Image (cartoon, rainbow, N blue to C red; front, side, top):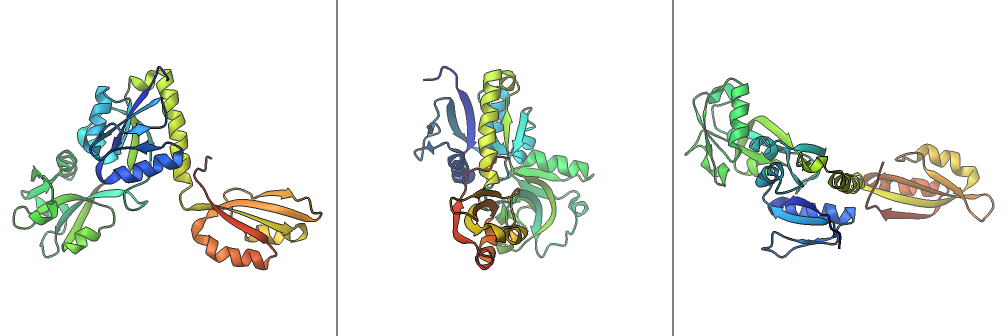
Length: 292
């Protein structure tokens, strides 16, 4: 067993499944019982800790963790002094960033941030909200919300600051967005001292390369096909590719094999066209990683 280990914090809760799936694509299999915060991983150089995303940046800053994945929002909320290594654009529902938004009921007379001067606002992200209001020159009472924030307006507070990805929940509760406070993707962050350790820094960078490769492969597939060499110029004109497609000669004289990476969403449109251009033996296959 390796004498050195990198201790990494991963988010539990709503982002846990998406994080485990990302690591699996990167080649790391993590398994955890429902109540364990110490999941197992098939890399003896890694120690994984499952923690609330809200806490991870604090534990990284204090050195209890060497690195961790948590939202940009919680790093700023905690005002954590950590090394931001990379954005990791994934989320629990979509590939778009989560947003902390200032929200009022649809029937509210408040239309802009300035209208909330002297009003009451509930949120889990108190620090973010206070700094946002201060930057806008607005003074309001900001209180911590223990959950189900959307039910508190308008009876208990005048507005809320809540997190959303699609906005569907806000619409379902007849809420209207006044402004966006921050857009947030998960980030890989490191402890300052740990990132000055050459072994830990190298381990993190190797891990990051694989995670980014897994993210790059999302919504992309590989295509292989055979083609008469004489028809190749017309096919290449039509074929979208990550770079130029790979072309190699087949054992059959006058034929070539073509291989490329394309967006999955165009496959259903382009395969019939490739067939019409003379391609044969067309194979579509999934990708785990694309490393640029």
